[in-house]
Amino acid sequence: MLAGQPRGYAMALTKNTEDVIARARHGDPEAFRLIFERYARPILSFIYDLVGQRELAEDLTQEAFVRAYRGLHALRDEARLSTWLFGIARNVARESFRSRPKDNRKVEMDDDQVTRLKDDKLLPDGQLLNRELNGVIHEALEKLDEDKRVVFALKVFQQHSYEEIAAITGFSIPKLKTDLHRAKAEMRRRIRPYLEVNHEM
Image (cartoon, rainbow, N blue to C red; front, side, top):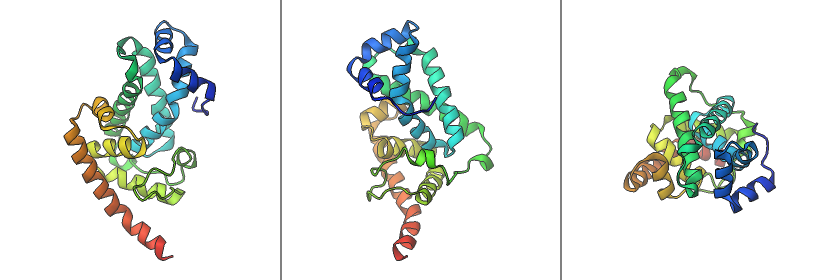
């Protein structure tokens, strides 16, 4: 289900989003496949940022798209398909995170598959994530409170605008900016020791 995205699917959806959504609403499985192929990878990456476990993130991604399929009738503003999908993903991840015992909220440091979904834009310093640093970052993410973790993932990892994040979360833009500022400061503080040790080596 989480295979790569054929370029034709992504291009077709980009050019004709409204028509694709209309077809999906009427039960066209190929139309919904277009939506899935375009958004599966970023949704998986976002959910992984929130839950920190690859297999769980894959399961929750599938759950998010099942909910999206069942709820297409509720999507009124076709231009906000991405925002709507990320909102569903956030809710699925939140429900899972709150239902798990704290002992099970562990980061898997060898998640190569998810590491490969990342790019060189993840850190403010522009450093490429390697496997070890990926684990350090997700351990730091786990220690953020939920609001800060969500805005950090959406803004820094997914490159969403404040307006898009406000639509996804329901938070005001001033709150988002404050939470992001604090999240960045906390992430830098937690990651700095790792970077300093590796710089010395």
